[in-house]
Length: 294
Length: 324
Image: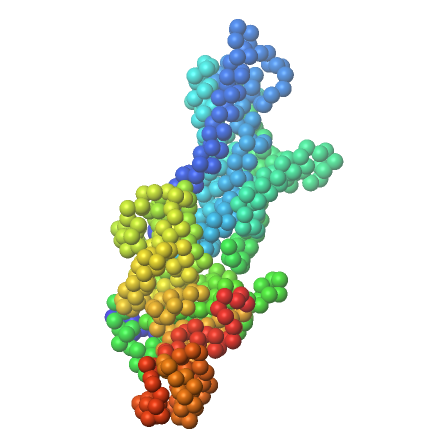
């Protein structure tokens, strides 16, 4: 009763710190229940299977492909000796395109898909809060980066263990490390690969705040990804290339050196943080000032 | 409880309005003026009908009230707090259905509500399932709660949208065209739901382009055309503004028309055995006596009450389906 006597300021229920994470939980579950997400993860899980079977078929009959056995992704020649190398090969094969494309689809759809479906207005009047919703979306996209990378890594590890022997392994520098150490490095590489996707995620989220069409945002993000990948291959743009987000992506292989060569790894993580800060701020500035008319 | 004290406080001046806008204006980037200097006052405890043809600026106004779009100029206060600045404090106490329901087709009806409830940081997760079940029950969707929302009919989607607005006890419900897509039985249910909520003390802001819908449930109404507010007030006052018609049924229309004119009835017209005119100031009993004294045979004499539609036409000079 006393509340009603108070001045017009409404004394309603108060938000609780813990309750605000309900949206994040809902977002994670909802993302994982979309067929699209599951299909993307399925494709990513299939890549190591294909690579593993291809290598197995190729080397059947005992003739292991030599150390200079042509091109292919990094580490592919080592797989027959040690299944653990399939993890590195699969990550090297998916990082240039499959992984960032999957992240671009999920990030591009994050806000634009909700706007297109009209559900954005109901989330905002709930009220989710624009900053909170954007942070939730970005956290979810980053969780998806990690999940997608782990799906590739775990699938590769399973296929590698099934088709090839496991054991001690030789680093790029030629030293031998134990299997447990190798497994640890594989996990570390998976984390670095996931972190490499943070820049695309931020870019996709920003694009997502610009339009009310999820499809348009996804296509734009993936289109930008391809464009930047091509630009990164043009030698004449060498002044620009170190600032392109995929430029240091394959530096994760340096974790397989002994001792680890950190320079490019640190540059990669720094660049991803820069992209996250720039496009994250742009997305925030855009989304918090936007008229929601869809 | 807020509700009873809110009614008690309704004194001479009444409590602070639930919605108050001053000069609220929205000009879209194309230069189109969607809402033009709106001064809207929605009293607490009212069922407020917000009328206007499609395209008159109703939805833009509602979006500004809910903090979804920023006004070009002017202010809007909801539950006494400025919007869109106070969305976090205000919106948990507001249930809204804006421009039709929007659902996640791949989630069940129940999961849709769970998600919308999780978006509200003031909603207690411990009571979430129970509140969702109660809201589903209230709109009659319990049986279909487990079905995927994409399999819902338009009417069921509309009900689910309403259920989302009823997840919490609200001080204000904003319902934009709530009976769209519903069959007559569904419309009746929504109307009785609105009355029930209003009797609990919830203020209901109901936008519609259907006049009889407003007339049946609303205590107050405002009329918009082309982005401007034409009038607002209690429904009784609005209808009274447009005066009713005196109707005399008689086999002697000529004589009746002459007598009525003598009695001071203006704008007399005859159509078959029906003679109509503006009701006079004097007692109708005297008019009746005069007719009978003059030998006019009278089958019936009534004053047809003016409808809100008459009021609307009188105010805007146009039909209702004209888009602004």
